[in-house]
Image 1 (cartoon, one colour):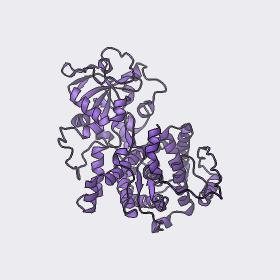
Image 2 (cartoon, helix red, strand yellow):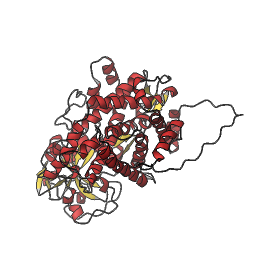
Image 3 (tube, helix red, strand yellow):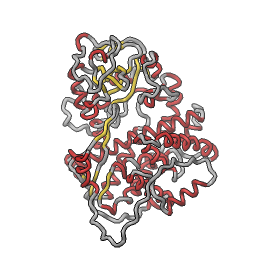
Image 4 (cartoon, one colour):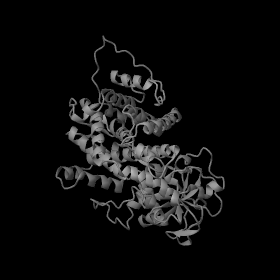
Amino acid sequence: MTASPTSSPTGAGVPDAGAATPPPGCPAHAGAVHLSGTEHRTDPMGLYERLREEYGSVAPVLVDGDLPAWLVLGYRENLEVVRTPNRFTRDSRHWGSFQRGEVAADSPLLPMIGWQPLAAFLDGDEHQRLRSAVTDSLGRLDRRGIRRHVTRYAEQLIAGFAADGEADLIEQFAEQLPMLVMTQLLGMPEEHGPRLVEATLDLVRGTETAYESNQFVVDTLQAQIPRKREQPGSDITSWLMTHPAELSDEEVVQHLRLLLAAANENTTVCLSNTLRLVLTDHRFRASLAGARMTLPDAVEQVLWDEPPSMVCPGRWATGDTELGGHSIKAGDMLLLGLASGNVDPAVRPDLNVPMHGNRSHLAFSSGPHECPGQDIGRAITETAVDVLLAALPGIHLAVEDKELEWVSSWHSRHLTALPVQFPARQPVARAAEAEVPGAAAGAVAGAVAGAVAGSRPAATPAASSAASRAAAPSATPAAPAASAAPAPAPDAAAPAAPKRPWWRRLPLLRSRG
């Protein structure tokens, strides 16, 4: 796993955390950058450019456990990797670190890289069998139906904060909407949506109840099988179960879980980034208002500049080969640098030139494993932004763009909050809301309030009604419980303090940290 002599590491950029002494021949032996280090967390794009200047289109890096890998930085090199599965497989059982017993049993890499019998980890005939079931099922979705679901839930969520004149579009909108829509596309009961939103957020945040939340998601999906066997519908679950590929019940459940996780995380980030763009970039607001640029154009620009996944794991070399002037050994892991490939000077010499209508970015990868649900993500994002801008004219960012904060991992980067202000208004009942049972609509509002408060939603009459029905004998699993301290009773004699906009507290909170 040595770099070519013409581009050998110089030792610059040693991670701030100490690395274990690697075996001779590994990229880490020459002082490779750690993707869990401070530099990648604080300025990933700057790091990619430094690595590109130092190593070229492929750079040696370290991941959790000080394990060596190659980060593919070049646009063409990324395409070369994803389009030649005979050289670079998705089957992680080829990983040399696995075979040498170097991966810890509790490694945080395992949920994303550990082999599973899914289409995402297979190549060849078995991959084609499973993927055909997924792509065929997604292809049967009515695009207008997707947009109706998005519009309905977006209007419900907006109604929950429209009268406040302020909101956090991450917690109160972007983190809620994709999962609510996906539960409908999977043919799940209305009342499942809010509870799955809570459980998924719990998983993403890694709280102490994350294990219970994960089990709730799995149990909920497993309950779909007998329900849809008895009452099939026009939904992804029913289509997977009846596809000619003859997926087993376990294969159906695991692919539903993969679809939920991927669609929720990627669409949430894409929606968040698109919202930030139209609220902060005056060029885009002016273009949208002047009809010189469509909202789909804006989404594609975001996918070029800020793809939901910056780094995508992974591919593994099936034999000794060469890539970007570097010697790649059999069993080496390659990480797809989607964000770095999108800004490769070889294809984008001037990043200020808009990419209107150009879908040749790497945001959804390419080749046999290209994201099959990308059009769903686009539909959710475009429709959600359109509904929000129409519902809240005058909406604007409540803080300076530079005050927004991001959180990064080795593979992604997303906003922690997107505070906005707008003229307060009372929500107006829409025709779409009439399609939603009152209990489900109340549960959506309750889930939003609970997520923003950082606890489970307080019971509302509508939500209680939904909960009581769910408690009846059925195959629906119970949502994981979480404790919440009761709010103190207000002092009737004390005058009401003027409400201070929550977003004004952000600088104070940061200064205390």
